[in-house]
Amino acid sequence: MLKELIEGKKVIVFGDNDISGRDGAEAFARSVFPYASEVSLSFPDGPVTESNGRDIRDQMNDNSQKGISPKETLQQLIDQAAPFQPVDDEPAQDETDDSEEDETGDDETQVECQPFPVHCFPAVMRNYVMAGSESLKCDLSFIAGPLLIVMASLIGAARVLMPTRDWRVPATLWSVVIANSGSMKSPALKLATAPLYKLQAKAHIRNVEKLEEYDKRKAIYEIRMKEYLKEVARGEGQPPDEPEKPDEPRIVDKIAGDVTFERLAHMLKHNRKGVPLINDELSKLMSNLNKYNGSKGSDEAVLLEGYNLGLIQVARKHDPNDLFVPNSSICIGGTIQPEIYKRTMCGSYRESGFMSRFLKLYPDRSAKQYPGKGIPDEIKDALMHVVELLDQLQPEEPEPGVYNPLPIYLSNEAKTEYKKFHRWHNAEALTMNGDLAAEWSKLEEIPLRLSLIFHYVQNITESRIPDQVSAETMLNAIELAEWFKNESKRVYRLFGSEDGIEETPQQKQQKRLIRFVRRKGGSVKPRDVQRSLRGFRTAEDAETALNELVKNSVGEWASIDTNKQGMPSRVFQLFTKSTRRLPTSDQKTSDISGVVDTGDGNDDSQPLAESATAPEDLGDFLEYLD
Image 1: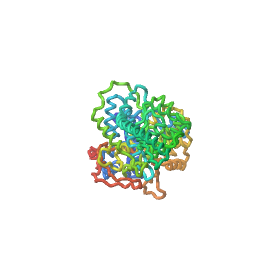
Image 2 (image 1 turned 90 degrees about the vertical axis):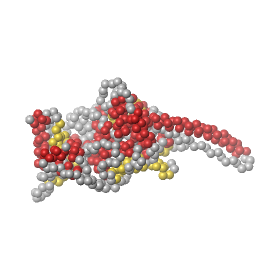
Image 3 (image 1 turned 180 degrees about the vertical axis):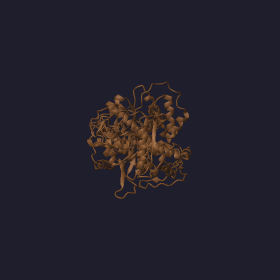
Image 4 (image 1 turned 45 degrees about the horizontal axis):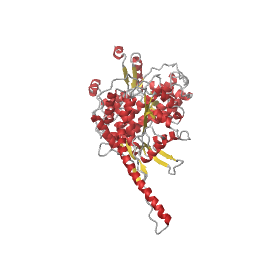
């Protein structure tokens, strides 16, 4: 009967958070494992106890005090479920054998392509991406990736997110769509950047008018200057006043395509919010780097500065006026074919971290289809309205020539969610090596950058923009960042074994130990490790290895409540990622407590109204969920 019920299905086993509850859940998971397509384990939050541990009802009752519904709590438990894999007493793989692993640290030899989570986007972006995808009959990511760059560039150096007092995060993003020729990536890029080119067309008209006026004033100045010099040469009487030289006009640029570095530097001087580099063929941008200077890597270094609002300073040989641009923002976007990407992003571009900063979008190939009717005008107009409002954002100018981005902050709830991601993300990083490990360090900040973009896109139409990012916005940003992490794993398989970096025995042991703890439901005692894995002769050896994971912030020790005398019992608990989802809405005031976090370390939240507690009776409990 049980076999027929679960055969071929995904099974999630919920257990009480005590020793017997975890053992029972694991035993049941082991019994259904041969029949289910996938088995996972999930336990309530909190420490593992010897007995009377927390169960699902306890977590629902606690969450109800925070305004989180039972269904949302259940979804939270489902999302945080850890994959279960039976572990034999004598595993075939020892601590030095990594034949089934690659640099991603995954057991699977194939990372599947996941649909782009367009529901994470604010409504105006989501509607445009979905309508554009339907019109071009292309993957959502073809439009979503470049549109993110457009929105990021419109914020640029005008605003920053401050998770702490000394940590400022810009909206700047780099992305690349990797796809074969004929896959509709170029039309999708054109569609995504169309609003930016509309702004550029209007700016171009004003630029032409400014230049024409400047040319007239300059011609008059030159005539008057000649007359002035003649008068001075005569030396008769009081010399006339020297004519005033007209200032060069400020040329506004909204986007840069196939430009040289010299041109880009000049554009940044006149556009302190930043200028995005967007090119249909990203390989053209790469080939232009360092093309016109003798110092290899100098242009690349400038772009790296532009990723983090760095200082760009250029001394030109024949120009006494050096370029000095602090708080520079350079967003980069484009498309490239897989094999060209593989050849281009190599060598110094990998070593410098240039490649690891790109968010990668690599959708599966699909047959080309006849296009649809096009994007409805109301969807285009809605996006264009937001684009025009974002374009008006500017950095503050406390004194002439000094430009500083204005800060916004995280609410306490948003900061809590990001901390969960940060902890889990860096635990994952320990299971990786080589270039992907370097990329993981760059991806750590992506939820913050995405949340800053989403915050302004969602709120720019309001009369007053909140100065804090909500938890809902942060959760959407985290989910999208997790998707990009999966894409990074897929893209790095383009390089196969070219990385050439070998893991140390200690790294291999840590990866093996982390996988073991995951398969045991996320928590183990040293004795469990010593009994189940070769290489740990004593429980003390296992405890030492687990202590190393604690030092690396992969997990923590949790005490077990017990009535026995003597030393308290404890278990090692692996940190897990936070994927609790909240409904995406376009309301500007979140239902979640809106306490602003200005980086002072105070994570206290304001309690919400209490809800009814979950009933103890199983039948009543199921009705309660409905």
